[in-house]
Length: 305
Image (cartoon, rainbow, N blue to C red; front, side, top):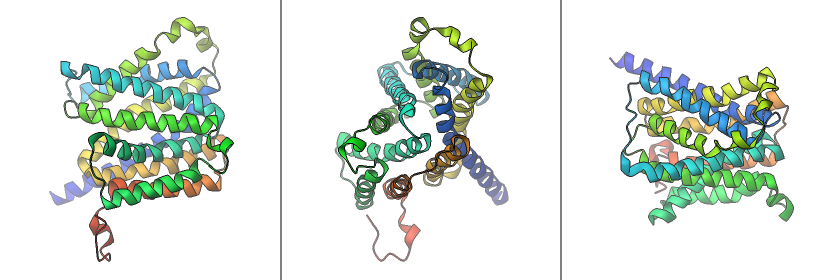
């Protein structure tokens, strides 16, 4: 029995690593997509593809499609911020490196989530959380290259700070929905409603462009919608249930590194030193905010609590 449990943990650890690779890959492939179609059209196609892909996953896992009526308003809010996140995401990629965008968004989102949650719920931060937020805010300046007013408030920074902010708000609202629904069902309906926000684009833009795009456009869309979002997300939630919240969530720290690596391999982007320092600091901040456990550093005489 113990051997079987160990084998399961090893299997899901490997799958979680693969899922984080999928998540990191979405950044450079999304940038490639924006070179062939408008951000609005790409966002619609992505959400539509994700929604369709989640249907067999939900059926395979024998999950219920039913949702409580009292959650409809929250679904509208979550889908709106999800749509805004994708809009900032795809538009912002036109202003800079995909790898850096991935590091900014993936690392700032949990830091902002912790800050907003403390304000919204009026809770006192633990010592370790204060340390994490302080590190995140200080080294966030490296990520945003806040050496001048122009660089700090560049379109690239503004779009991806807005994306991270949208995701942080979405995360807080989603916590209420996750009490009533399985995360995969939650993601299905969120993606479906997000697709509806972008649905008018098919009447506004020339859809014939989809007949002219190269074959790699559809491969890129498959990677960001099916592999990264549908499959990657499904693996993540199942992996968290097997490995536990702390160990499972720790795998998300692989994502910014994965984004930088694949942006270098696929797009030839060379990470700037500010991105590396700021990204490393942000990962440390996330650790203190979300993942720190007193037994991690047994040589500490006092716990950071």
